[in-house]
Image (spheres, rainbow, N blue to C red):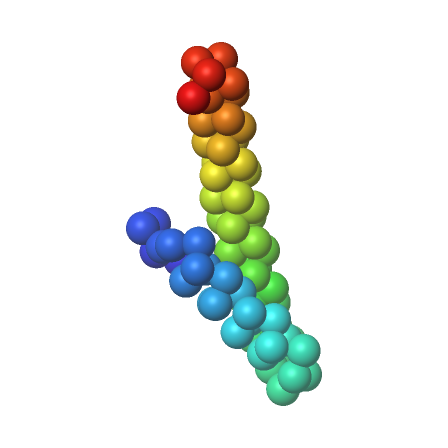
Length: 68
C-alpha cells in the first residue's frame, strides 16, 4: 500500500480485494495475502475517516465559539 494513497484509491482497492475473496477463485495462500491487504486498507480508510470527522468537529466548534 502506498503511503500517499488517497481514501478513494484505498476504497477502490479494498473493493477489488473483497470481490476477489468473494469469488472463491483465490488459492488459500492468495486468500491470506488478500485478507492481510484488505485488513490494512480497512484500517487506513478508518483512520482517514476518523481524521476527517475530527477536523469537521474542530471546524464546527470553532465556528460556534466565534459566531461565524
